[in-house]
Image 1 (spheres, helix red, strand yellow):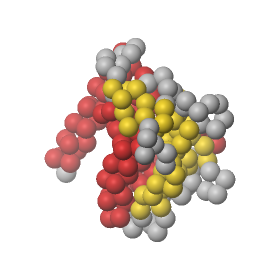
Image 2 (cartoon, one colour; image 1 turned 90 degrees about the vertical axis):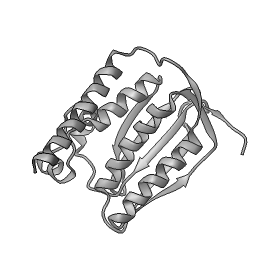
Image 3 (spheres, one colour; image 1 turned 135 degrees about the horizontal axis):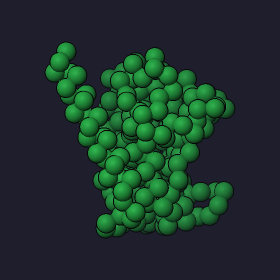
Image 4 (cartoon, helix red, strand yellow; image 1 turned 135 degrees about the vertical axis):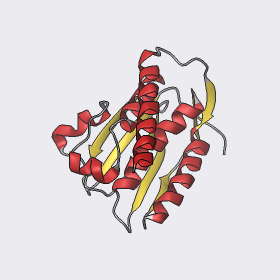
Length: 190
C-alpha cells in the first residue's frame, strides 16, 4: 500500500510541475508541423488497447487530414488526458468517439478534436470548473477514477499555449463531449 501511495504521490508531483511549467510559459519554445491526423490515430490506437481491457473501445468516427504548428509531445499529452478520462467514464460495451474536423462555426483554419464518451456526463453548473487544477466533480467519482484533478487542467493550458481553446458540453444523447479547438490548421494531402 505504501508503494502504491508513493507512486501516486510521485505522479501527482510530476503533474503539478507540468502545470507550473505550462502556467509560466507565454509561448511555445519551438513550433513544428504537427500532423494531427497521424497524432490522433496513434493516441486512439493506444487508448483503444486500454479500453478493450474494460470492455469498451475507442473509434475514430470522423477524420480529415489536418496539421497545425505546435509541440507534438504537448499535443499528444493533451489528447491522451481527455481520451483517458473518456475511457475511464464510458460504460462497458460502449465506444468513445473521436472526431477530427475543421470548425464549421468560425472558419476552415481551426482544427477541432472532439472526444465524446457515453458516461454520466458532468452537472451543467460544474462544466466550466473541470479545467481548474484539483477540481473534481465529486469525491466519490474521483475515488473510483483515481484522478487528482490535474489532467484536464494540463490539457487546457496546453491548448491555450497553442493559441486555442477547450470546451466541454454534455451531449444531448448522454455522455460528455470535450472539444479542443486549435488555430492555424491547414489541410494536408491524403
